[in-house]
Each structure stands twice: as structure tokens, then as C-alpha cells.
Length: 213
Ligand code: URA
Image 1 (cartoon, rainbow, N blue to C red):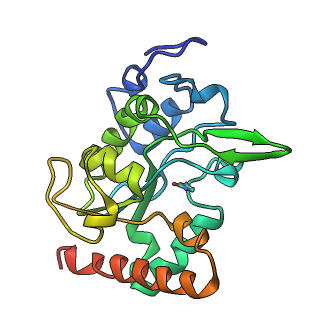
Image 2: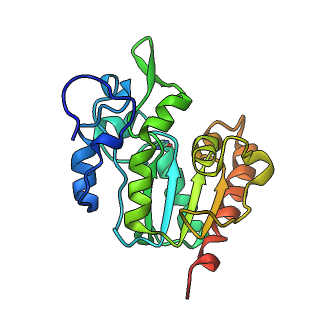
């Protein structure tokens, strides 16, 4: 396994051969697959049961996730929890993770502002997501936002055109992409936010029918 302070260009060398979620998480804590380890407080690995039926994939941890080490615990995560409850998806059935496992941010005054991960950073981090998919083998995968959708469904995928469409892929039999919950938080006013939330819940509410009885 690769070690030391240098960046290797891919997480692949850090992914252990013998895998459990715990061993993956422990190994990911030392990942130097791209330079983001220098900026983030810690690796934020996925969370949920090893046999979760649904995997939700976001972009990257945010400020609160970076501090706590847990995915989707900040404002976007709270909105996601509300939407899942409204859509009738049991939180215990869900494994949540991100394409990129370190927080990429730029300083603005005292604040740390989200910065979009580059294609190279996404590619470098993908071995972790592939390992999570192989281990959890979810029945349904939902990509939250364009970064996750394009990482898993290809660079030409457009959430604006194809949101809510279920498709089969090599890594999971049923995959769908919808918006990222932070897009709902950024809606210009309450009325727009309500409309966007309702559409998001509608997309998530299609999950239960995709799970084997
Ligand atoms: N946004 C994400 O994509 N993932 C998180 O874990 C938090 C915010």
C-alpha cells in the first residue's frame, strides 16, 4: 500500500485487497491519491449498512462533514433526510457517500467556501466509490447532482435533461440521477425552494418501487 507524504495521482494504491467497509474506511483515512488531502481536515468516507439496498452518491463533503468526518450531516444532509422521509425511503436502507472524499474549499475571509472538484480529483478518488459499490452491491443507486452523475454515468450526462430516469449500468442494475440537495438550498426564494423540494421528493419517491419486494 502506498504511504508517505506524496500524492500518487490515484486512490487505487490505497484500496486494500481484503475489504470490509471498516477496512476501506481505515485505509481511506490515509489516502494521498490527490492533493485534496492537504486541504481537508480528514477523509469523509461513506456511511451506512454494508447491505444497504440504496446508495446515494453526492459530490464531496462540505464544511460540517469535513469537521465531523461524516457525510451529509450539514444543511444539505438535513434537507436530504427530510426529503427521504417525505419520499418514504427508510434512512436505515440507505448508504450515503460522495464521489470525492475530501472537502475542497477556498478561503473567503474566515469562511471556507466549497470549490468544485476537478476532473482529475474525481478520477483519482473513484477507486473508493467503486470499492464501496462492489462491497455494498446496492439494488438502486441515486446520483445527487452533476458531479456524481457524470462520474458514474459519463461526462455527457445532463441532470437537467435526464433527471429521474432509471437506467441499468455495469456497476448497479438501477441507477438514477437527480439534483443535489444544495441546489434546493440555493433556490432564490421560499416559493422556488418549495417547488424544487417537491420535485426532489418526487424523484426519491420512485426508489421503493425499484427495490425487489
Ligand atoms: N454535499 C455533498 O455532496 N456531500 C456531503 O456529504 C455534504 C454536502
